[in-house]
Length: 370
Image 1 (cartoon, rainbow, N blue to C red):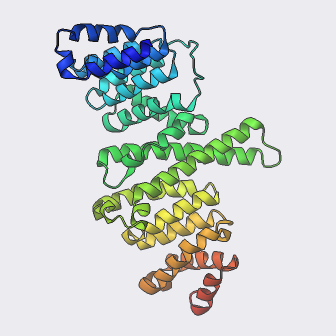
Image 2 (image 1 turned 135 degrees about the vertical axis):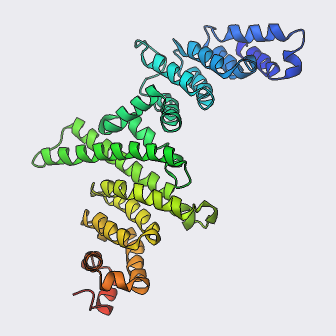
Image 3 (image 1 turned 30 degrees about the horizontal axis):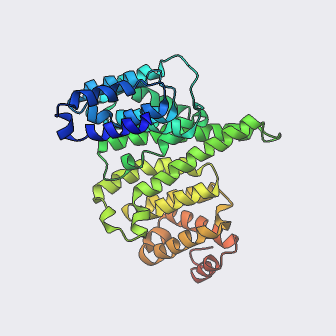
């Protein structure tokens, strides 16, 4: 019953007529007291009314109060409610929010009502940290995100961070923010690929241990996430679905392509077909910006995984691309030495895989495929 009563008082607190009435101070006092109630359901009801109670306080003061409420709060749901409130203050008071997060990170471990590895318990802090690091470069968030990225093969937070940077990576993103986002995913991709290759080499003649299997799985999941985010950030998916408004200026697209191509190639070196497919789709979407670079990069991506040409999805992307090159960029695939070699490599891979369209193309243009 008390939680319903606080819900009702919280609703009244959101109404200016009640806040300024003769009962306003009593309503605010009751809701404020409920924030420290022994019952987590009551605390949750009070937390929802936080903004109504402290609407007249400046943002830094609200952040300090949220930090105090978070300290020692053991209930996952109540903590998440306050984390949402903290995140909503991050743009207006980035340094204050950064300080609160630093303080929470330095808290001694204490028993909570939720498993600290619970998925929901980790989402919000990672999102806030990433926002602060990308947009405001606050010291604690920047240092923490950097640590996550360089330890990506072992960091669940690194994976979550890669899943919330899509908007920061987009061509339309502020160049400074975009640069920091690409720096983060580059570090995460490099550390994940390095661990992936090293571990595979070490266990080549033996069955990997359970911990090694988990690390390998996590590393490849990070690489897949990065390739996936770059695919969506590029605008390839939007264009495929007819969303022309998603198209950025050519300058912005070229900047994105310059930053994205090396990261995409890093991801493709995992030799995992699903990742290679994301990479190839993105590269081919970006092809009009630099046809030669795309041809060479796509060849490198496909050649890194000998099995990709056998994937049913691959031929619907690569073979039409090869046909377009022969129709529109004959100079590149007939007379440029590196272009000719790359074209032959791609066509050979798909023809050798038994792809009928590739075989037909090989015989039709025998002067290229010899």
